[in-house]
Amino acid sequence: MRLLTISDVCGVAALAVLAAAGPAAADSYDGNWTGSIASYSNLGAIACRATVWAKAEKNRVMGMVQSGTALWHLSGTIAPSGMFSGKIDQFALAGKFTVTSFVGSFVGQRECGLQQLFMSREEIAH
Image 1 (cartoon, rainbow, N blue to C red):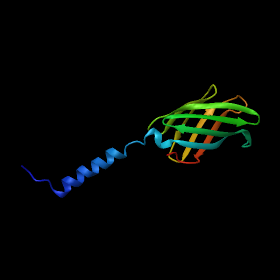
Image 2: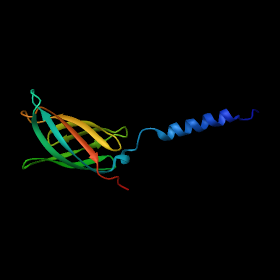
Image 3: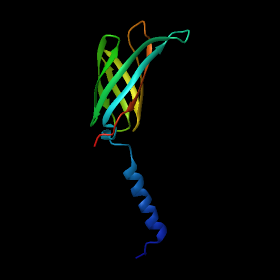
Image 4: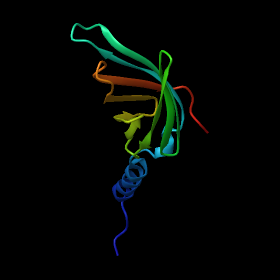
């Protein structure tokens, strides 16, 4: 029978920490998120702009997008890795959540083309 050395114990402890650190749980993105959407013309001027409000709870996101007087629904799911798959009404939206920010893109109305969505977390849900 061999006695464990300090390096054996440290190696096991390091593996335990790495296993526990794995991808973030989907609920680590829970909270209220706000941000904006923008797209740019070929000349660099803003073509379309909107404001976004969303709430993430567990792995689900529900929210609204407002541009002028128009409102659209935002919905989707967050994978444990932070990857997001969803829609703004009928337009597919993909992006990535971190603990404090979201960056995504979608192709919406023809006059707006490719649009970028940026959000930050207002608060961390408990």
